[in-house]
Length: 373
Image (cartoon, rainbow, N blue to C red; front, side):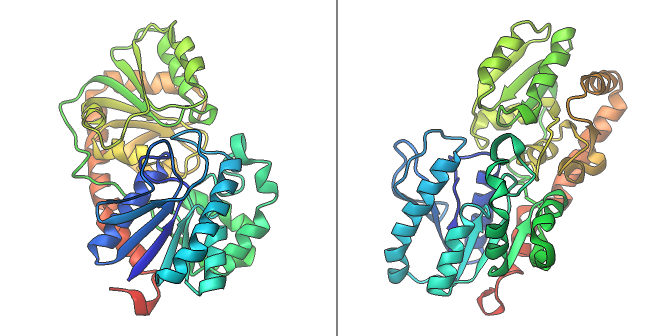
């Protein structure tokens, strides 16, 4: 079967959703499907290339930053994709469209379905859902619910990678809730493995206020902790966080954006004893899954999609609660048995629940009956 995939981000562009989309596509390819991706360009990335057997086409539009894109850029991508596909879909045949991010890209899937009768599945990733990301898209989401309902109504299914995000989209969808299916994100447990643990605390993600890096820095700045803090990621808070870290009594290293498939990143994860992501909002964090697979001692949020990701394989605390974060870190430093128990549970959970082969099979089960293989 020929599958058309639409996404505003695709490796090497974007955040946690980007590598997850590629893994799903690789799974489709392993099952014998042909996959073509339409996505955004950046810098000197080629207009078209094949990676892991997947045909990637980058339409001509503007994108200023590698790891984050704006509403205005999304509008440009919609028009560029529409112009491209008007001709392309008359020359190429597809049996299914898998669209990532219900807005903006779901609008293209809706048009494709109307114009070319190609059925589509939508995967939600967080910021495309009203009430999820008020620090960037609150104003825009005043106008998107009717669009989301229209896209959902004509879809085969809408997939949420977390129960938390499913609860949010259900508020918008009303009677269309029966279209929503839960399929978690996955992780490659062969790629991310535990190593020789060292005195390292790792935290990764986009440097946004809701991610909570500022509170981690506050905690480790107040007193010397017996580890070095490593922060991987980039974003609008970089300069502010670096300035704050200058006063820290615990060493803090900023790595900027790091390819999550790089040897440097895999080695850092494997060696990290602790991993923190105490964010105000997460859908189904790939960073958390990477930390579980690498057997880290995980500290994360007790809200949104984080508790369901880690369950009893990590410790969940309230976002912005510096006292709880400090207490938890001190407890783990002093309790070798608890630390090692959590590390073992983390690895076991990654292997038993989040295998990509299992996840892709769940997606294929949603295909129209005549297209499955």
